[in-house]
Length: 91
Image 1 (spheres, rainbow, N blue to C red):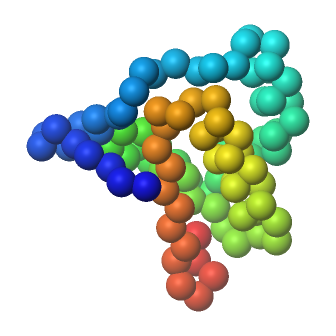
Image 2 (cartoon, rainbow, N blue to C red):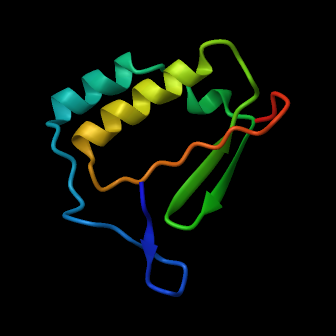
């Protein structure tokens, strides 16, 4: 997906910034989607427009991450996502 910025490194997001889930739906989703995924991150760092997380290669991790991104793209269509896979089994 493309990404635009304002020339000063700030991310410009298309459309309204609003989650389409109710509080009940949001709580249910959080309890079902890989609880603790971010706690498994090897590192976290701020990046323009959000945060970046690095994970060690673990069997099934890609499926867990993809499920969360897919769900987030349905309810919070304003959030951009980018996945990077380093060579030789890197983060």
